[in-house]
Length: 275
DNA sequence: CGTTACCCCTGGAGGC
DNA sequence: TGCCTCCAGGGGTAAC
Image 1 (spheres, rainbow, N blue to C red):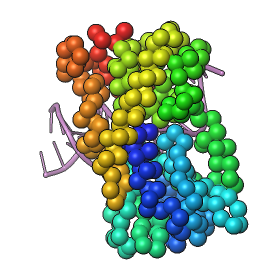
Image 2 (image 1 turned 30 degrees about the vertical axis):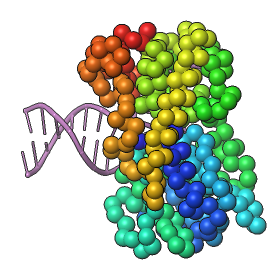
Image 3 (image 1 turned 90 degrees about the horizontal axis):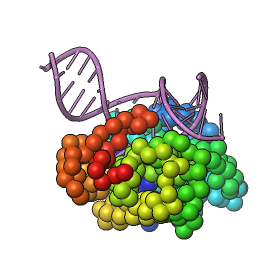
């Protein structure tokens, strides 16, 4: 469920609660998520004070620097992961895999499908971690503009939708926002990426930024003492123009929204508005 | 190198 | 009701 906006909303929700606080204890109830959760990881984290929380793509990065040296905790929510604050000693429910216990609160990681992960990155240069170092550009940065995208697409013959979802190209654009952004830009998801004109790249970049930003704003308004729910009826989902609207009328022209498969993922689009 | 297929895992929806 | 199949907002890796 989490795409970039959900992860960013989680980050913003976490900051006021745990930055500056020390992890007193860690509980792993599940030996394996996407990767093994080693006792070593547990040992590294315990006693660390969270200095700040950053984000790279859909990875949450907890700066755990201390006097003994730098280190970062990486958390990826996968498809079904969520982080939530619970009162101390709250009994765990099914799929509650990890607790980070602070003095006054507990941060609980739940993930039914276990596609999420927790990783330790030793040292201060977390961006060189194997899972992060080959990630593509952040879509909400100044450097991500039409000309940049045009260059990225130069040698890519795969469909544009597949390419903007490729985290080695652009991070954080998941299946929903890829569909919504292409609709907004009026570009067919099937178009070979390298065929997009500079003008279309400008439109697509604007659409991606707008889609992601709007979603962050919408999600941010609903966060209080818990950090992102487990999907379901997210505020943004109600605002989808094409995603999940197979056979329903296009909000712009009334034509029937189409559904196709691309690289194993569902793609929704309007065959009339998107060329 | 670029691209696709497969895999990790559980739960919910819908057909029979 | 139960059983079966398919689907799900991610992404790393192997293989072509």
